[in-house]
Length: 334
View 1 (cartoon, rainbow, N blue to C red):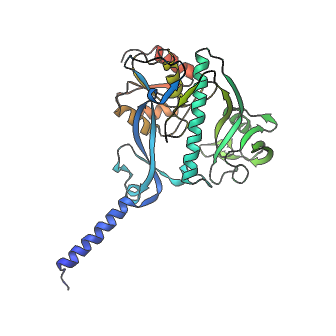
View 2: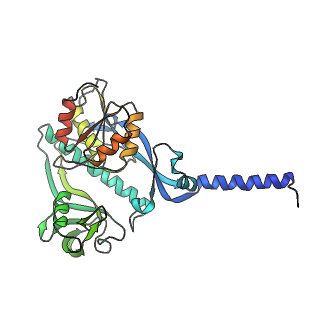
């Protein structure tokens, strides 16, 4: 039996070190969702006629750190507190690469800013001109009925001859069918209108509910009566809409936060409804770590998920922007 010489031992150690380094550095085919931190909205917003805020409170938004998992993180996702491992196809539907995903998130962020400003200004009594022009297809679910029929950036304007102006319209029209039935959808594709027929499928979470397999956003034409600029840099996605709307009100003189530090997540629609979002586990952990007093989240599954990770953080579930304002106005002392 040959003995191990110091040289062989050193070589084996180098090989092992290289393998370990590769496991930490080489990307896998999965993604990690990680807690980020809560950020104040006010320094990122410029509003015509804004008023200084000096009560020690503030409105905060929170994002999720999304990055490729390394090989070792894929095997041991619990290496990072609060992380969630997700397969690539959950974040990148067919035909969508990483660059396209980021572009889509930035477009969604820009849309959410305009919608949030419109909702807040209306709540303050301003006249805001808004026209819902349909539902924008953001991405397609893999192997869904929509693949090959619809494309990202299509704007759905009708289903079965009935006008679609909001996401709720689209859901209602599609879910009026049983799974397996056909729906006739008209889209605006560039400068043309095109009709497609799609056979619905069963929602994996509710086999009695019909779906076509699309991720969508509100498409609307919005004209604001005053200038509102929101610059979040490279942060994307629509989930900060509720926080934007609350901050716009606060900066224009309404005491929304009551001197507290308030974090909020939730996509907001033009009618004021607050829509569920993803990454609530990571967002709740980030808010809790940031010393925030209250966290507003969409009611339902989002609120239940937030409470599982909240600790002593106060979770306030909301369904609408007006409910969020009322909840903050009537919030009892901690």
